[in-house]
Image (cartoon, rainbow, N blue to C red):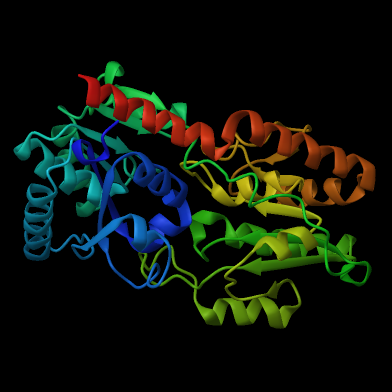
Length: 376
């Protein structure tokens, strides 16, 4: 294949999205095609290997403000017209919408990834009503629309955003099983049983339920240590955000330990006995994938984007959503298992990651669709 004749453009909201979720995909694309990424340049890859293989073009961050949105769309138009790609890949909601507007104008075949829908169909807010209206129109000509789970796919088909022929399931962004491999813990946790939550501090991630469950659990199992890693996130709606004051209050009560944000979560996963993710809904939760790949047993909610990762009683336990009492019960049940039983859960989890969620499977699915476009 002549690399100069085949060009791929990836549209992502910011460089961190590439680094966190799609680095392996972009790297593989750059080895096969001339690859350009249109995103907000934040310096994540400055002096890094990615800039040596991939052209990064700063088109800024997509926003809701109408004037700024038009300016963003115009920057996309100029960049895409210059790149002349054979196919375009888009990720996250606003790049999906704005990107498909431009690629339809330019006649560029597009593969769009729905990484998660959040409250897209339930919310009555103006922004989500507009998003629903736009999605229903801009995806009509999209070559392929990729979903991380069956539930999200069905919602888009049932609401006639897309046809069944356009849809495909790919297991989220997948997991690099070599990077997230089992590690020997560097600490014995002083005899404590460590439950660890990793993620943004948002209500719909189930943080409140985790804290409430921790408070309940400590009354009957004082050996429990409940830890939180993740940023206080102020870029979401105020109704979802939790403050540093909230966190400080939980710590002062002795319910949780807050470990701030960490560049590398692997040592903390390795040191934990169980990873807990009580989210209300996900596309495909990456923390659970990472922890399972590192042979850790999991506790998560029986909801879309989490239940696909955990086989109840096999590699973890499922609890009811928005139910801190049930979560506390599952945490106690996990702590009462023998070390050997938890070890077997972890091994089953890693085997599941190898078979279903390996990053190479995900990247291969995108390459297959790109090749179909190239050969059409």
